[in-house]
Image 1 (cartoon, helix red, strand yellow):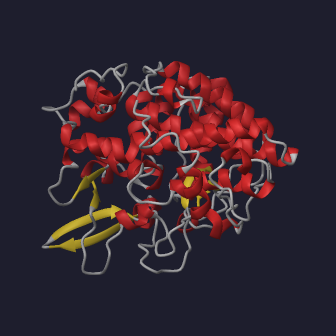
Image 2 (image 1 turned 180 degrees about the vertical axis):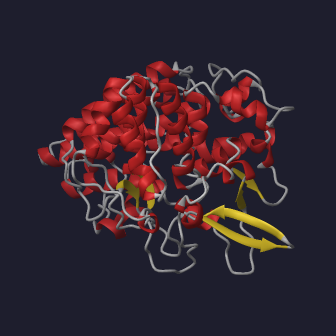
Length: 458
């Protein structure tokens, strides 16, 4: 893993950027000695600024995993999306990722994720030594733990085994070998469980753009699902659903900044745009074509009468060709009023997590009830299942049409359920290999860290 002075240590550079990027949204002036990280954490306001800056940096630029790129590239890989014009991105659609895209994987995924992880580690270390207000110290610690866990969740699902860095000691971190995915998941469980104990049920922000207890638990429920701990996945998702803070609104309102379904969102920091993902997926004008289109395979997955097909998909005709594209976000941007925040965690996923956990525990009645909660919003008739296998098939279908073009859910689901080879060999009969389930470790990182071993097949 590359942790050079170009990126690390940045207790100087990164914290300076943090203060500058979030000073407007949190209304805290950068301290005169902002580059001295130990001083930053001696004051409530500046300590808060440091943690809030991680959120801001996650939405600061377009070309990073936390601002839409995860949706786009995994959507190509999972045959949800295709890129309208010939481009190097086609390698993700055909599972033939070559050296050209290693710089994309490094610049958009690997390096940003480890920057945010380093920032979270720095905050955690300094907060531990800090004498700021105890309740704030607990809250900020919980937030940093969740943000770090979220980054690692993306890394481990994209690349498999990745270095687990829990310190700001960049000299030792720069030669860490890849850590088994199971160890990383164990760390995520520990971090998220600790965060849930530290955080309040109340949001520390006016909107749902900072982590609270339920955001930590929502991500924890997902981790338990991915690690096949069905009992804990059901227990934790039930807590989130039963919190009473979240409801399922009409489809048009799901991705608004005021969405009652939102468990965690990222607030845009660029005044010109709403979400970067909206900018990527929506046509720039009435005369433009969308860049990323929905595949025929995904389009045909929607049942007749599914309102998601009309509300969350847009249509445009170009040269006699019908183009279909995702419209979960409605605002392209370019100076438009800020009405949408970037959705990270939402209630519908928790119902689907609980449904799947119930299915694996042979609790068919409760599983189908949760599944139908999602279907009813889409104006679909209730599904019926009498056995685990049937219910799991229905849940996979529902996850595909509910969570499409959203944070790589389909790509990750195919891998965690062991279905990826079966599905992708049909989609890509001439190019798919089982090793394509993981992206290659960027070659630039392997050159910088001799202990990184490339994924098989690359």
